[in-house]
Image: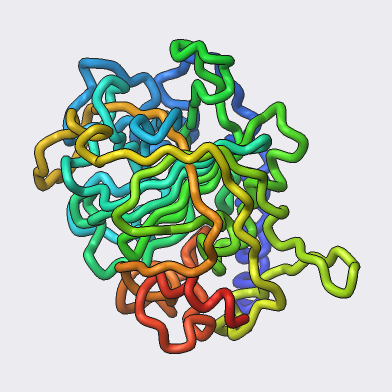
Amino acid sequence: MPAARSVLSAVGLAAAVAAQTTSLVPLTDKKFTYPNLPYQVSPEQILRGPQFGFNICNSTTENQNSNCQTSFFNSIDDFCLWAPATANALIADTEAAEVAWCSKKGHGTRVIPGGALKGVQFLTTPDYIQITGFIDQTQINMQAADEGGELDPHGADEQGNPIGGLVFTNAWSNGNNNSFIQAVEWTNFMGGNMFCYKACNPSGKNPAGYCQHIYDRIGCAYNAPAAYVNGTFEKCDSDSMELPGEYVSNGVTMTYYQPAESLGPISTVPYSPAIPKSSNCVTYQSSDLYAAAAVPTASTTASGSSAAATGSHSGSASASRTASGSGASSTSSANASLRTIEGSMWPATLMAGVIGFGGLLGVVAAL
């Protein structure tokens, strides 16, 4: 009888969790017109909730301890990344509570400290905007050795990582810098002193497809192919990439699905991602782009919000690159193999002994 009661209890718990999940409105169904936002878009106190920070961000919340979770992605000099609110943290441990760190002031968020960005490429394509680059991640509260993972508006309970995180951009506003459109579908990989961030145009032909979030274990190389040149600050126009996971074999379009984590490390992927053709590239000096960035400070716990961003992207046409960064295993630091988070796993075996997140792009050509 005690065993039977345990089974019934487990079944009841599973049913209760399922009922709570179905009662939640997915984050991707929560549509807003900026600046008409609630204080929190995901205040529900069930499952992983409530939301850690807040979405109404302005000059009163702008500081290096801000918990603003409304992000902007406008141009090469105006974009935000998702990173922890507390110092020396792991993406694996904080994915549900990341806050916005922006490249300039003005959005009520934290500001990426001056000198932290080591190279940035911003691409504008017909279907999405994309920004990739190199960063001293310790300056945005990540552990130096954190291999990181993927943030996106989905997650196990469809409330997003971070929960309630919103992204807005003026990149699709026909030159009106004061008009922002919500990017409902987006992905942001952080870790190994590198990042890639893609926001898909809701009016594009396949926003959910181009910002697919199911390939969290194979990283930036497959989700956001670009040049990844450290030390370069560049914006370009670009063709759209092939849909993540799609490739052509013997004239037939195939779809790759990454294996379940329970099956172990990913040792091979059946295709090499092509870097889309780019044009109209313009290069900059970092001092021209981020002169107003905050002075480097160690940020600790949070409440408030600080600077802003818009994002942009670029990339070049070369598949090879050099990179500093760190490794390729899964989510954060030493116990990466024990962690299972949305968007955390880098394919360790795929790295074939290459040390560095950047190596993931380097070995792509060998696959």
